[in-house]
Length: 121
Image (cartoon, rainbow, N blue to C red):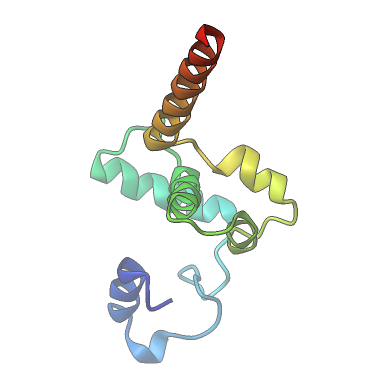
């Protein structure tokens, strides 16, 4: 977890004696439940001016896409996101980037040009 600067800054803000139990707990010390987290996220997002169309899961998707663009193996991304089916990661979490689309377009154009050149010969 030392690689995640924001996580480290947040953890550092927590008094050391209060660091126990689940990684994330509510004000009663219980593990955070999905709905509690969603409500908390929305409250913070609203205060920060994040549009309502942006959900907390977008950060998760963005992280998976960023990992893929950084060259992380899909199997590792799936394990990191705790997906038992790698196709879930591929289908729902990896978003093609502009760079990916450019590479694909460039290769398609080059392929068409090569076919034209071959037909002229």
